[in-house]
Image 1 (cartoon, helix red, strand yellow):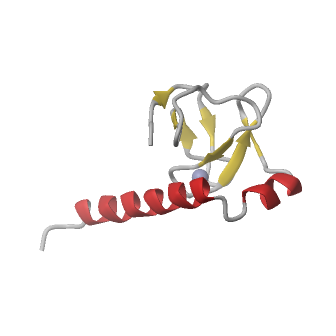
Image 2 (cartoon, helix red, strand yellow):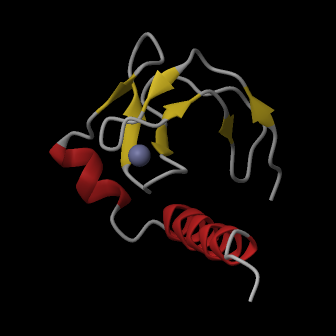
Length: 94
Ligand SMILES: [Zn+2]
């Protein structure tokens, strides 16, 4: 899994509003392009890059196309695992 950090323009998640100023590719190391699917690291919301690389909601066809996509499932699983670890690290000491 080749993961590279890129810096698209600062954009906010369409669902939670988190500013997303980086993107990591799963299985490739190219910059995002219009139509690519992206997942908010904060809340897991799935969006697409618009022509200007802002975010736009998925079309109905895109939702059907990515449902069960193994790369999306892997990304969501990794995101959830990182969130669990992050919560544990930030728990108050007992
Ligand atoms: Zn979000």
